[in-house]
Image 1: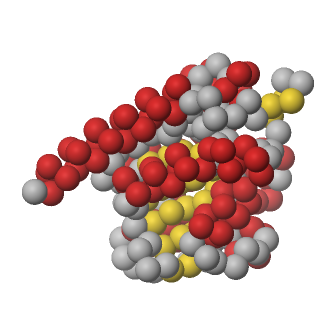
Image 2: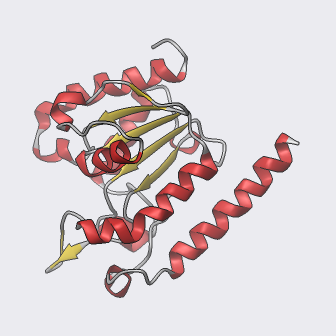
Length: 200
């Protein structure tokens, strides 16, 4: 019965990602190269949620493939995890840009796209969600009725809901311009590893 449920959920996730690839809900579909649905096994216990695809992700159709992606993989190793064990995605599935430069998503873009992330969470049913950066943290905290606070105050803390645990972290890209955050992110990811093992 469980195998059938996993199989059906996998099919549903694949169809959802195909739908994302065809999406025209907002203007970002007109400027994108590829939509970036996210990736990972349907049985993933941990889901990492970032802000939005960047230039490299837009070209490849995969999340976290640039310098920030390499650092994320380093952090996953710190937590005792492999990339193929976890689900990785973003709040937005298309790159927000202006004059060729990445920019923060607007509230309208988040509203247009967030139903896709909600459905991914329903299908994957992670035990732990790690939000990467303030955009993802704000969205997930609002979704689960948690008080929204600055990422600098709550990173590495554990927030429990009825169905899962949420741990906010800085976005890996933040280290590229604030190297002093690196040791904090390593510490936070070690905690994620302990949570995965049921030790925190």
